[in-house]
Image 1 (cartoon, rainbow, N blue to C red):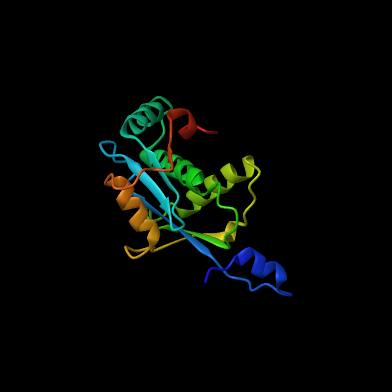
Image 2: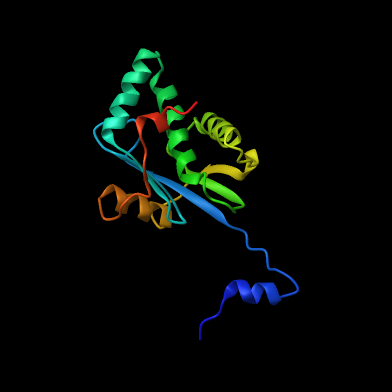
Length: 163
């Protein structure tokens, strides 16, 4: 028997609140120029940053005299922004700890990008922690990285250079 969940909820006098955390994982680190980068969420969104775009970002970074750490935090944040910007409802976002000690910079840049695009999220709603290989975000990221799944979005140089 099939149920229309929305119809059932409209008939109910109350709603059950379900807490939801979206995990975010990366395959192919942003600073490894020879491989593409995939960022995925546990709800199935994936973005791909091709090696050609990463090469251009590195050249841009060299011209602007950005350090490797600045390159990582800036462009990792942008990639995460593109994968989470369309998530409408979630209580929290947990980003896999890929870059120990850079969490605050990544969070600040991410919140700045979200606010510039009229997406408001509390600072404490974005956390960093171990996501693990059992997370759906890991499976989506690795499958996309290995070519078993198509990305939802392939980012361009212009998109990655968002201010």
